[in-house]
Amino acid sequence: MSDNTSEARIELVQLANGDIALRRSDNPEQPLVVITISDQVDDLMPMDKIDIAESMVEAGIERYRDIQVERVEESQTVNSGMLH
Image (cartoon, rainbow, N blue to C red; front, side, top):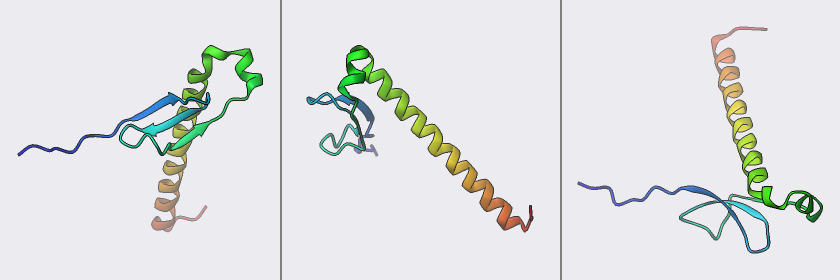
């Protein structure tokens, strides 16, 4: 038996208007995140737009992960009956 479902990938692309979008490859019309870099910043480093956006997305993912870990640890502390 084979699995015909395809795995959606997340991609970071530059849109026609210059914005950077994080989107699922199976649904490119609905970006998950859109990053607009100002003309002022773009003038300073036009070739680095994707790198800047990638760093922003990575930082967001890392922060999200940290928040999830904090919530799990907080939940375990509350469920253990420990008081601080």
